[in-house]
Image 1: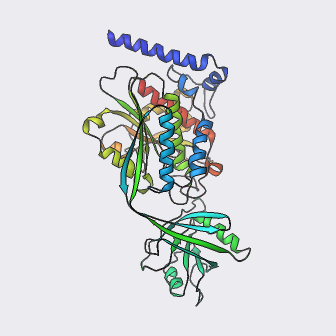
Image 2: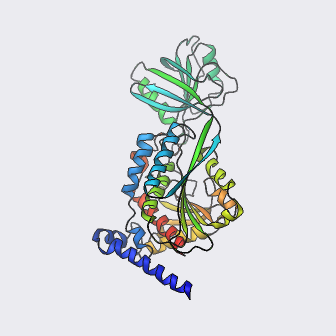
Image 3: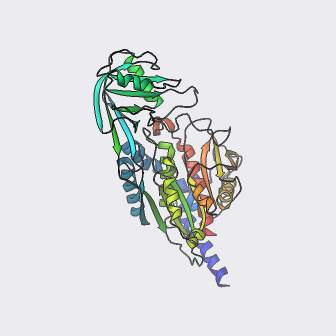
Amino acid sequence: MADLSRRRVFTGAVALAGAATIGLNPVAAAQATRQRTGAQHSPSLNFGDYPVVARVRARRALEHLRVLSDKIGPRIAGTEGELRAKDYIARVLRDLRYQVTLQPFKIADKFLGSVRVGKDTWQTGSSPQGLQDATREGVVIDVGDGSAIPADVTGKIVFIAAVTNVADAYLTAAQRGAAAVLLGRIGADPLRRLSAFSPTLPTPVTIPVLGLAQVQAERLRARLAKGTVTVKVSSVQHKNLTSYNVIAERPATFHNPDNKVVMVTAHYDSVPGSPGANDDGSGTVLCLELARVLRYLPTNKAIRFALWGSEEYGLIGSRHYVSQLSEPDIKRIAGTFQNDMVATAYDPAHIYWLLSVDGANNATTQAVAAAAKRLGYEPRTKGPVARGSSDHVPFHEKGVPAANFSWRGEGGPALLEPTYHTPEDTIADNISLERLQVSLELIGAAAYDLLRH
């Protein structure tokens, strides 16, 4: 009887929260009850949906993304960019009055480079087998695929880029006096743009060897077509690195005898050269916006947001986090909603995928599917479908209900935008506010439903 009374009080509190949110605000009411793009019917919301759907705003999330992607830029594990992002995320969550914990963990050295071209500076990878902590400046000489390098390139910055394997051309350039070598990546597939990289060299050399992304190679070649180009290149080995998970929690409003918690997660690092707007700045700012919306809503479970460091080097942050959990801590988790690449503007990526490791339904996929049906987004969703490759994997391995949620192409969840992992993953080129709004509403409504029951 006491439990029934508590449930009635809870339901009434949610109803009041919904009324307070939309009842006095016609704009919010219209936002909550409008028919969604791509929906077959108008939404049929439950009480818990109203205070979430009426309040989440993709444009508010975009304000955070401008900081992470435009101002901070590439956020490579353990380096300055990731550390600045960590501080920003923690500050936002503390301002929202969550209990914030920073979880540090050691990671391997990173080898990065930079190319200064006129007023532009491009972040690249740097070969561990090349000279580190060095800066070289010189005139660029484009030797194509490297099959015909001049006999004397003393003091020159030798640029090698081709679709085919450039093999040992870097070594020939070094032996003939090059000050540095730039290896460009040109993909054969027009739908796949290649990222910056840290070249693995069979034979070490005593000059910097940098790995450029495809767009960087194309831009350099376009400049060379107009005349002489002088660049400054640098290679840096980042040592003794620490990456961080940012964990923010708010306790349950009502009695929580089993101490259950619902997790909403994303990773905030990116790959070299990429400002990571969609991967995974979008998932990160989804978490920050939902943290704002959910912070005062009544719940029967605790809410925990987790922003992972060092995902791009093998799910290191989330694996570290799960490895530190006791068995009772693991059993506390009612579900983990992992959000990775939730706002791409790439037109063919119009399916919102529910991705569990084994392809089976669990509490998170069921909650999102139910939310999609209530909101009218069901035609735009597919799944659950089997796929790993994101931070839901460590949770699944421990038996926690978990899934990754992401916009991908119709051809399958592996179909990603061409700008994936490249310098072109920017807000301007690769963020859809409409898709970000859909993601916010689906995860917000689904997570809150699980938090209430």
